[in-house]
Length: 301
Image 1 (cartoon, rainbow, N blue to C red):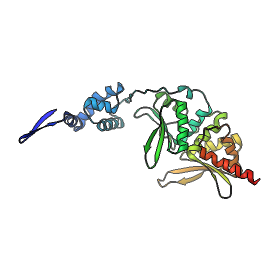
Image 2 (cartoon, rainbow, N blue to C red; image 1 turned 90 degrees about the vertical axis):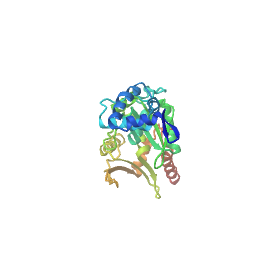
Image 3 (cartoon, one colour; image 1 turned 45 degrees about the vertical axis):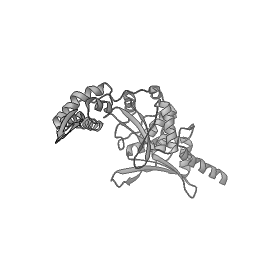
Image 4 (tube, helix red, strand yellow; image 1 turned 135 degrees about the vertical axis):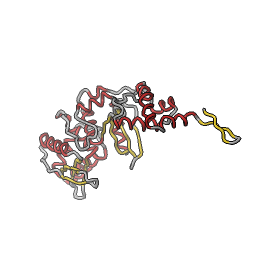
């Protein structure tokens, strides 16, 4: 604490304020503080708030300074430590192909992301609706992660996240990369699990509809042309669906968007393929559309 006076009054100025101005108010001193003081504490596994308390700085100052240095390359090595993880991930989930793994990868291909800038992260984020929450809870239980994360954006979202380097590297081996929106490629999936992978992708970036004329329609959409071409060709080779042309759309952001669509008999054949041995590993409301169409079709015949 530092004592100051003004007229007949004296008051105490917290040392933290002076310390913050001393180190963070000057660009060179602030960067030196980060490199010399923060990096060892991060490697010990301290969180941003713990580092801030130790050094007498605000958490926001610590976070912004570290991110700025990492982005500018002033720190030539990445900071490994986040807070120590206290739960054990089921690594065996990724070692053998299963319908659960195939579905997870398909859903990740549509609505997943991965990064390494601030700790290794692999995550899937969906709208926080009952069906989406249920499927993420199922996957979280299979992975061994203890909880889901919610956040408010333009809408309420729910996220499954795994913070393990081993899982991140496993996803790289499957062919996924950070910033995969336009570079996504169809991974090598054993034939017996392709329907589960494609169903996962459908639950993220696809739709099933039954129109007023009782026609069934199924489509897949995305920004990666190569992925959708491979998906279309895979369905053609496995169950004889026609190689439909990709529909190309331009979004307001000028980004190209692609869609492959199946209708009538080909859509029925596709749904039968997708929901074979699906059990509860799917979004119920999308499956319900197909089941409703099937009920109507059966009643008419």
